[in-house]
Image 1: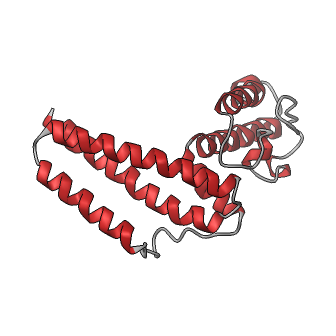
Image 2 (image 1 turned 180 degrees about the horizontal axis):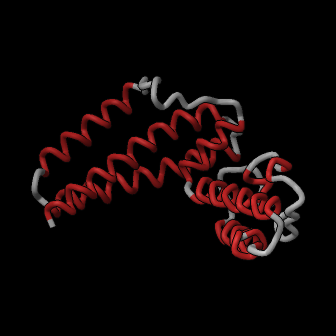
Length: 183
């Protein structure tokens, strides 16, 4: 079963991974337009509404494939989720819940960002400037992660930076909440 020719008698488990499901190369940098097109094509073929009058087994299969497509799409369209998925495919466990060790320089950066946020308190302009700064750091880190996966083929190093990027993403969310609360 391939994208564009979804066979409901097949199985979603016939695919090695989400990349193969959408007929994309297994890499960090993806063609987002191609991903979107592939997703829409799959949904048009397997959406449960198209199989209302089908046999129960075909309806169930359609729902399973549509659900798998949704999960695959949500994973691949977001860079950090895609990176953690690539780590999983490489046999790496990010240990997000248990491994809190980070390089000393990153821990220092975290402390500096927290201090800057506390210093800004209720100053929306200062918080927005900090948000812009962190967004640039996050974008730079995502480019680095992409290079570590796609050029250096070093998922271990990419994983360390993914964990750092996850902190920056969560910090951005916290900044968003603070700014929203002040607006």
